Image 1 (cartoon, rainbow, N blue to C red):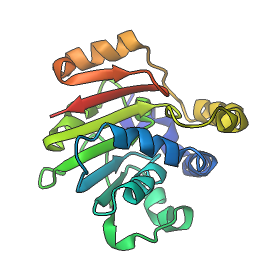
Image 2 (cartoon, one colour):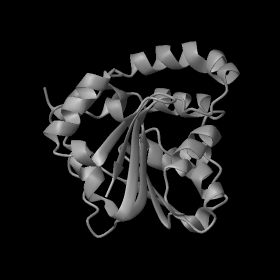
Image 3 (cartoon, one colour):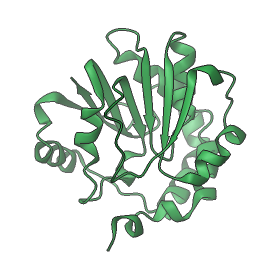
Image 4 (spheres, rainbow, N blue to C red):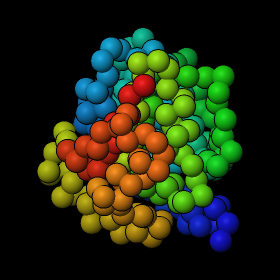
Length: 208
């Protein structure tokens, strides 16, 4: 099966948008957890994938001197981005349309790379993990995986959890175990530069 055909979510842009809006109460807390892994304030932030927007824009509030690039792998989300998100920091925001298995941003390096919903992308023929690492500036950090984040209140999770689970399953969500993630990092030759974090979901922290 072709990689594009195996990614069910790509055929459901409206459902992706529904999930992104459903998660509105989550982004501030998730951004707080991401910000804590930064050893210094990042200047260039990349948020990657179809669930991008909310956390990256929340990070701009934490880091007022940063610029954000949002790399979306669905053209429908590029065209509707400004309808779904508060883009008051327009002068600090760049939106890119990418193809996951061909995207190439070698002319750009980032101090911080974040990706929520990364397990949707980790089909065997998508070599995304080394690509994420390659995008890092010296001393940069990447934080990717899935979950609500350690600072999202239980009341928020209880309110949206069932609906989120049903809709994510409908998009073809892949569920990874810690052991599978460890194997993935070893196959990518990045195990020694990565840390698996289970606080607030299942995440990988990579440092350069």
